[in-house]
Structure formats: structure tokens, C-alpha cells
Length: 335
Ligand code: SAM
Ligand code: SF4
Image (cartoon, rainbow, N blue to C red; front, side):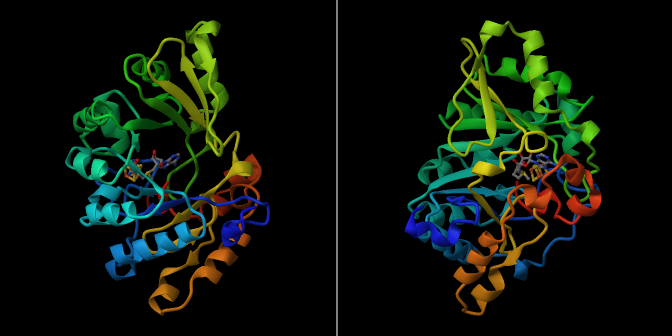
């Protein structure tokens, strides 16, 4: 254990070196699995972190050992001062990354390059324009798809996240993998997870096993290569022999990876969440604005982190709406 890291090390010895910062609760899409159709009650603007506050809090985490920061949301790029935030965070000694729906990334290519961003995660749940519209409730397929191609062309390392839902887009698994034949992208299939208001049920989740069954029934055994997962990786990685890209499954529902978790999350209103699934959060912004030290609050939150999925350590518990329904909607957490 690194002494430097102490306040970010939990009672299970997990060192938290990765901070995900949500810049906004707003979005230019309305993905059904992420937010309720009626939207969510947004925090008043005065309750959201300013760019200076984002920087101050991020710097403190970096001083305590965080080596990677990912900006997320809502859609981080709808925030008007997103370029300023990116530039300020780029001055920290940290790997900077972003997760975006790619709708407007064409306007940010130069900023990303200037800020040294190399890794970009984008969301794309279907290769079919009509289905894209159904899931996102917006008609932006072409824009999104072309922007993903643009990012690849500009040399960014692109991971494409697709949330799989049974009888909706699970018939596209092979199409998505075939997309990696000529494009050097990492395709990641995410198990649909339960959050407040997203009408989740286990039957809609396409499991890791089901994805791999599909892969094995379509490709020859010796074509399917298991890749080495990176440390703290949330995904199990594969590729098809000779394809330029790879694919992976993120299985938080059927195979959680909590033992090696190194992530903390900061919401747009400055609350620290010690786990994606935990319904408890710790307000950092109020004490920061009162001029108090926020380190004790951070330390207490990290110490309170439970071993697995915010305490929902079995599938039965995860399925209980009284438990997962207490959490925020994903759009207000920052996935
Ligand atoms: N707007 C950006 C985007 O869509 O990439 C960043 C925020 S979004 C909340 C981050 C990631 O969370 C996306 O890849 C999205 O697919 C994923 N996500 C949202 N709701 C989810 C759910 N219920 N289950 C699994 N993944 C989810
Ligand atoms: Fe917006 Fe991303 Fe949520 Fe879709 S998944 S509604 S793009 S924040």
C-alpha cells in the first residue's frame, strides 16, 4: 500500500486511483436504459460544480494518488465550459479520458488533441438507424456513427459501449463484432444494469454467457482469441483472429468485478459516490464552499465502501427495486 494513497484506500485494501467526474446531468439524447421518459429533476445550477470547483476537487484527488480521470455525464460535451474544464484538468499529472455519446465530438477533436486525450469511450447501442432512434429517443444515428469513424480516423483509441437488451439489439452482437474487422475499435457489450426509473428486469439483461454463446455459435473456435485483461479492467476481452479491433463484455450483473475496483465517482453536484451501485453519497461541494477541508469526508466515504455492488452482493438483492431504486438514475451518476 502506498502511503500517499491512504485516504483513497478502503477497508478491503482497494486503492482508488481512478476518478470519474460527471460534468452535467443534462444530455442531448434520452436513452431509455439511462433515464426515465419524463426526464429527471435537475439540480439547480448553483448546486453544480463550477469549473474551478471541478479542478480543485480533481487536484485534491490527484494529490492523493489518482492517476486517471474520466469525464462523463449526462453528456459531458453539452456543458458550455467543457473545453475549459478539459484544458484545466489537462494541466494535472493524470491520464485524462472521456465518455461521450459522440453526437457533437466533431467540434472537439482539436480540444481533445490539445489536452492529450487519447482514449475516448463512445456509446452506440445499434448499427440500425431506426433502433438507435428508439433507444435514444433522438434521430442522430448518422451523426453519431460518422463521428465515431472520425475519431478513429483522427487516431484516438476508441471503445464503443453497447448496452445489450434482450430481443432488442442482441441480434446485432455478430454485426458489432464484424464492425471490428476493418476498424481498430474495442467493442464492449455492457450488461443492462438496474437504476432508478429505467424499467430494468433481469430478463432484459443479456448475460456474458449469452454473448459468448452467440460468439461461439457464429465463429470457429480457433478464430476466437481470449486477450489479456488490463489490471482493474471491468471487461473480459477477446478478438477474432485477423480482425483489427477487439470485443469485450462488461458483466456487472452476472460476474461483478468488485474485488479489483479502483473507481470513485464524483457527481455533477459535487457528491462522492464510492460505488456505482451504492445509494449513499457524500457531499463534498458544501464543505468545499464553506472553506472546510474535504479530505476527512473523502476518507470516510472510501472507508464506508462495501465489498460488492453497494451491498447488493447477490442477484436477488440486485433485483430488489427497494434496493436498486434508492440509487440515482444513471444519467445523474455518470456511468
Ligand atoms: N453520455 C455519455 C455516453 O452515453 O457515453 C456518458 C454518460 S453514460 C451514463 C455512460 C455509460 O453508461 C454509457 O456507455 C451508457 O451506455 C452506460 N449506461 C447507462 N445506463 C446504463 C444501464 N442501465 N446499464 C448499463 N450501462 C448503462
Ligand atoms: Fe445521455 Fe449517455 Fe445517458 Fe444516453 S447513456 S441518455 S447519451 S447520458
